[in-house]
Each structure stands twice: as structure tokens, then as C-alpha cells.
Amino acid sequence: MVSMKEVARLANVSVSTVSRVLSGSVGVSEKRKARVTDAVRRLDYHPNELAKSLKMGHTHTIALMVPSIQNLIFPAIVRGVEDAARKAGYTVILCNTDEDIEEEKRYIARLRTRFIDGFIVASMLPDSDHIRQLHKDGFPVVLTSRLYDETMDAVGIDNEGAAYEATGYLVKTGCKRIVFAMGRPEIPLYKDRFEGYKRALKETDLPYDERLVLHERNGTGSFYRLLMDLIRSGVQFDGVFSSSDPKAYVLLRALHDAGLSIPQDVSVISIDNVDTSSQIEPPLSVISQPLYEIGELAARKLIRQIDYKSRTGTLPPPQVDMLKTKLIVRKSTR
Figure (cartoon, rainbow, N blue to C red):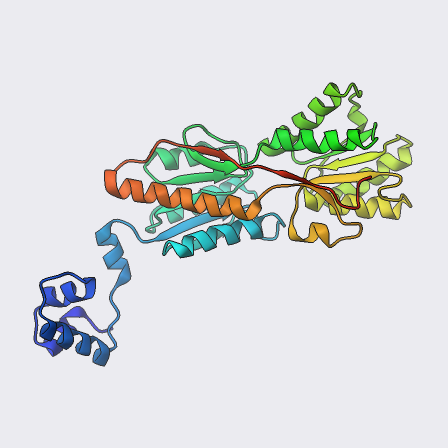
């Protein structure tokens, strides 16, 4: 590998002169600049960007931690992060934690010693102690998709409000017995969506029936059997609110296989609006969350923290940004 000393020797200048030319500093004659530029070209010299970055105090590299890129909501978030990071000259390292808290901790332990400037944590795991410690140790951190912590930056939506609106729309269009497909109860966003569902029932004087709440067992695919068992039991319902789009797809298949018409027999609504939600049959009514914008803003907030820390040596005061959701009515509801 060609060194700066070899460039200096060929150009017949000092190493410090080569350094000033490569960094764009003033005070070097045009003649010497030309000699250095020619030597760089002839030797095919590439500066050691890592050493340069470490000298400046950061490497323009950030880590993005998601449960799984195969989860349909995360590709749009990842793309938003990457696009915003690229515009600012940053590289993104993507980490899939598989919703395993120990794997998440292992990633953090490895990455914090490898010149990472900051972390975007899009995990849905409830335990945030290791994330809080990372932030206390001076690392810029932005949270999405998890319990928001007033001590750290976060980007997301009002999950309870979104669920309240979804349930309320089903009620408004005539549904009186609404199934709720509940995600893992230990995950905060699903608990919030459950609260929104119950609040909407209460405020419209509809009774809460525990039998209509389907609790996830062994993954999203379990909702097929859960809904089929409910249908076979004879419990009546005329609406289904899914706490996420992937669950809704499974529920739609179960309703179809049971011979029920959508939306004539049962209306179905969900929260997310991933790309495929408008392409399935019937197209899915949703409370749309701005997934790309969540990723984009998370990256901008993280880079703001990194820049602030490089100037002041400390992290800026935390901010939580709740982005607006939107009801999109398609053919799965009346």
C-alpha cells in the first residue's frame, strides 16, 4: 500500500505539504500542488480514510438495528435512513437482531468499539436498559418502534391514537363485534394499540369481549388457526382490526378459507400500509404510518446529535417526534 511518505518523496516535498494539499488547506504554492497531485495520480495513492476520520473524531458510519429486514415494515424505514445518511456523507451498517435481546446486546458491545458514530435502534423489544447505558456513555442514539424514553431522541407515531382511529372507523361503518389481532403483549407498541382499541369500544358504548382478542402464539402465522378456531366456536363478529399488516394478510386468508366475504360479512382494517397492502385482494384499508419518513427523520436526528457532540463534546437535549398517520380506505372495509 502506497504511503504518504512515498508521495512526498516523488513530489520532492515534505509529508506535511502532501497532507495540506490533500486536505485542501491554504498556504501551498500552485507549483507544489501540481507536483503533489501528479505524484498521487502516478502512485495511485488513496488516503487512509479511517485514520483521517479518527483524527477528526468521527468516521461517518452509523449502525441501524432492526428486528428483521424480512419484516415488511422495515424496508421502507431502512431506505429512509440510508437515503438521509447518504446525503450527509454517512455509511449505514444494518444489523438484524431477530427480536433477540441478547443478540441486540452483542451487536452493541461489538459496534461500540469499532468506530461507530451513533445508533438508530428500531427494535421492538421492551427492555431498554442497555440502550440507556449506551446513551449515558456518550453515544448518539435515536429510537424508533420501541418504548419512547424521555432521555433519548425518538421518532414514531401515536400508536394508541392510530388504533383508536382504526377501531372507530369500523364502528362508524356499522361493525359492532370487532376482533383485535394482538401482537406480543410485552412489546410496548402492541400494548398501546390494544389500549386504543379498548378506548374506542368504551367511547362508542360497545362491550369489550375477551374472546374477540387474539393473542399471538409462535409468530404471525398463528393468527390463521386462532381466527379459524374463533369462527368454528360460533362466536359472532363483523369486523377485524389487525395490529399490523403482516397479521392482516394471514387473517384475510383465514376469512377467505372460511367462506366469508370481505367486506360484506367482515370488514378488515390494519395499521402500517406497507407496499403490498394496496396490491392484495381485497386491497387493505389501513391507518398508514409514514415509514420512509420515520427512517429519514431518525437519520437526520442522529446526524444532528453527532454534529452537536463534535462541536460541544456533549449530546443535545432529547426530542421525541410523533409523525402523523392517515386513514386510507380501500376495499376490505364497508
